[in-house]
Amino acid sequence: MAEKEEAGRPTWSRQVEFTLAGIGCAVGLGNIWRFPYLCYRSGGGAFLVPYLLMLVVLGIPLLHMELTLGQYLRRGPVMALTKACPLLKGVGMATVAISFIMCTYYNVIITWALYYMFSSFRSELLWENCNNTWNTANCTDRVTNSSSSSTASQQFFNYKVLERTSGVEETGTLRWELFLLLLLAWILVYLCIFKGVKSTGKVVYFTALFPYVILLALLINNVQLPGAIDGIRFFIIPEWDKLLNVEVWINAAAQIFNSIGIGFGSLMAMASYNSYNNNILKDTLAISITNSVTSIFAGFVIFSAFGYMSHLQNVPVSEIAVDGPGLVFVVYPQAFATMPVAPLWAFLFFFMLLCLGLDSQFAMVEVMVTSLLDSYSKPILKYLKRKEFLVLVVCGSAFLLGIPNVMQVGIYVFQLMDHYTAIVSIMFLAFFEVVAVCWLYGVKRLSSNLLEMTGKRPNIFFRVCWWVICPALITVSVILVFSVIQFKPARYEDYVYPPWAQGVGWLIALASIIWIPLAAVHTLWLLPGSFTEVLYVTSVMFLKEVSSDHQGCIYLIKNTVIL
View 1 (spheres, one colour):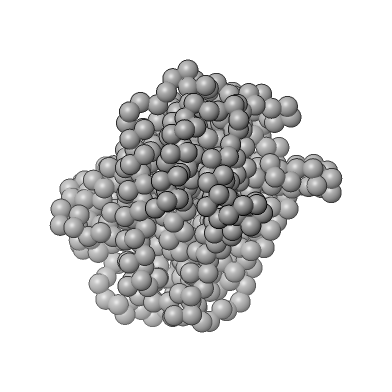
View 2 (cartoon, one colour; view 1 turned 60 degrees about the vertical axis):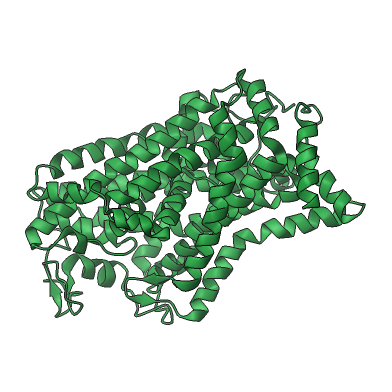
């Protein structure tokens, strides 16, 4: 039996703070940036079909699984997975690694948001026209299909904000303005979380709720603009032939994992601070449904602005959007430039991005801090004395590792890391997490944990998803991801990364995945006995008090080993 009230482990002051923190973790920049872009690239409304399907059969069941494990074991992902399935304890290590890797470059988006937010404090926005020192002769204030020209907002982002080079081969110099803003972003993160869940719980009341106020204000403003209905129509009317493209389905699954945070360990770490008898299902539904509703709500905001731009420039909506972060740092700022009271709308939008980004960043940093304290609390506190100093070390390390993203080559580094972390790594990680928890730890045992905490077992829908549907879908997704990535190399706009950069990308992906086989070998090496005996023992080890489904779990593992 898990310890119901562990001495010295803090808990949320109010349970609503966990719910808000979970929503803040799930609802992030991906809802404003990645989701609308994937919708655009996947034929508008056609993307909503696989997205909502993946939410129901993957997102909600797997989030329920993670929250249950975190709350029952009262540990972060490393120790929780070590206790649940020693053979695959590396899954917990991998979740920490992927969260840490992601937080090193994710904060760069907050840095760009800060740059744009501070640039909005003027009567005329800097990206409104081409009469600036960084603009080139081919600058235009109109959207064009010509590859020889670019808009004022594109040139502001590329030549003023990023000062980007021609490719990853050319590193360029450090962008000192972005460097200082990156430092400011990390200071904000530290000040919000250095006291642990007690300080984070207070901050999320604002950072999780205020973005909805701004989104609503933006939507009310945008739908009144001419052409807005064309953008909304593009968003909600599917191009059904796009559903035949397997990449659309892969992107839908990856977006669910990235947006909710499945496989990152963030919500598992947060759930470890819950009260033991908390209603997990309520939090699961609140977090997952709010996340997807926010994505769709943001889609109306973004695509109504696209429709307005297509009206102004007399081009189809399908020719408006661009790759990667350009969606919110090129296309939307360009729409602001022609709106009434443009600086006010620009400031509100980028302040909203700041709030959304901070929430997600809190969670990723908390994964590392919680896992280190769970595993090495005594030696860490012996030298650092206080948890606040550990948080400072983690934030400082991530800041230093993020510096390449604020060099002139930074956008290429950012896109490469995001491609191989947010799509490749997370799908492999999700597969092994499902194997570890749903098959080796056991659905019956997980159900017993829920019964012990809440007095209710999960219904048949969750049990079927855990046993069959989630493993099957993730297995197919992993196979498809590998095949798609193999034939479609990473790119940014028209720039295709050279082979050596692709190799670096795979090393980035392996930096998190490699912990799974390494930890398995470590476990098998340390324990005595033959390989089959050790494999059997490590697969069924767990807390002695839980034995209701012991024989069923042994039967499953025996058959797995034999096969």
